[in-house]
Length: 142
Image (spheres, rainbow, N blue to C red):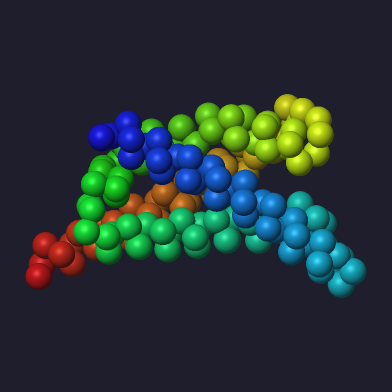
């Protein structure tokens, strides 16, 4: 079950990373005429905040499901999820980029996503752990 939870959470986290990066690019494109800041700063900041918020809400939603087995169990699963999310980037992004752009992405794009994931996924998982621990404390005290 651990492998299933780690795989599920890591692929979801990676898809959220990629999805929020794409959404943030759309956000920047809409505001390009009025925003004078660097694209990477605007896009990266918006994507990071959105990804962390969505993963926190997802973690909260999972605690409310009757199937508690979907929640990550312990720090080791969180650590494995963190590192497994890096492995999903080329698996998901290379085909996605090829089918949408018509050519294989550069390795620089993969590295850029990994650099985005380092702090964002760490914060998302730490906040998720805090939410899960808080929910467990509430359920034990009742």
